[in-house]
Amino acid sequence: MQIPPHVFSDAAIVAAYVIFISSYVVFALGKFPGLKIDRPAAAIIGAVAMVAFRIVPPHGALREIDFPTIVLLFSMMVVVGGLHLSGFFEWTTEAVLKHLPQNWFLPAVIFTTGILSAFLVNDIVCLVMVPFVLNLTRRMQLAPLPFLLAVATASNIGSVATITGNPQNMLIGSYSGISYRDFLAHLGPVALAGLFMDWGILHWLFRRELVQSSAAAVSEFPEAQLKSIWKPAIVMTAVVVGFLAGAPPALAAALGAAALLISRTTDAHKLYGEVDWGLLVFFIGLFLIVGGAENAGIVGKFLLAGDYVNLHRPAAFTVATAALSNVVSNVPAVMLLKSFVPSFPNAHNAWLMLAMASTLAGNLTITGSVANIIVVETAKPVMHIGFRQYFRAGLPITVATLVLGWAWLCWLG
Image 1 (cartoon, rainbow, N blue to C red):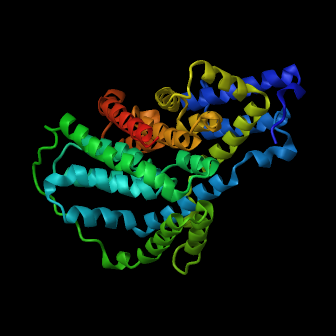
Image 2 (image 1 turned 30 degrees about the horizontal axis):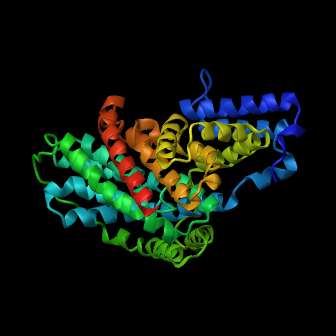
Image 3 (image 1 turned 30 degrees about the vertical axis):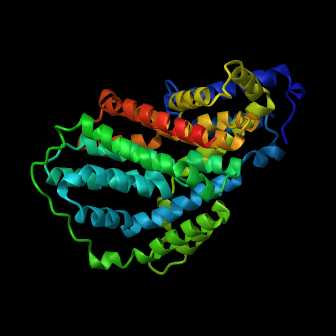
């Protein structure tokens, strides 16, 4: 239950503003100037401060946390971690590339990454795809840059299709109550068309670098390791079927995670190692920070400012979401903008617009999404991807896909 702002003292209101603004500054910069405080740490500090100053009452702190989102995120990390440990991603990629002509390497990377990211958490897909792409480009004597950019941009575009594609979609799925099938039916076409756009733009920008120098055979997947894939693959298939059948996403994913933990061969601690605990902490802290901001009336004033610039127009809302997502990152942006959506004439369409814009905006710069950062950092031992190198592709891809998504959702009404 939200506390009316008038019950707080002036000191508490000031403290709420300082905590909120300081936290979002760190979310925007990635760390606090002069200190080694990253985004998860800022979320923890901000959440503790909101409780310490009684802006969020201690007995009501748990009510601020959306546990279905946390459970879904954790469970999907465990399930996808099981696929990762079994070698599922390497097997899938090799199976695709083995049956395609060598000059189809770019679209193969784009669509494999995009489709996997649609149903699995895109960050982990990037972690697996980058080493594989670097290995093949080295053997084929190709410049790795266009293919690394393909992994980053396709993972973001593909993930827009479903609730489980990325963390911000999980958040939106929980708050909106939109079913998995409904979400996929509306945004799946945007993801598919966006992947074709991604292919066209990257091919046009890097047409010279894509000239093949030599062929490289894809290695055979070890038969012994192939046997370890079946269980996590069956579990993941069952989870997706549960999503499509209308089961609560958090419950379906949790059942899948529990099934994977029942094993005679896989050490549970290895699965725990696949979980991004920092992201989970970030989410929990963010719930408390935004909850405190709502109690102190900060979000209410933000809503009034939004009415002044008429954010209820789809075009304005799309631009504002894309801009804010690149300033403070997409998850904090969604946490802030979610308060606008219920007041829209068509809230269902507005939730989808928020998911589309916050996800596709991540392709604009390296820091636009965690997936981009993972690609750049993982590739760093082999090559450095600078801001300009990324932005050259990120700008046209972001603009093209955002216009596509906006037009599609406006047409659906």
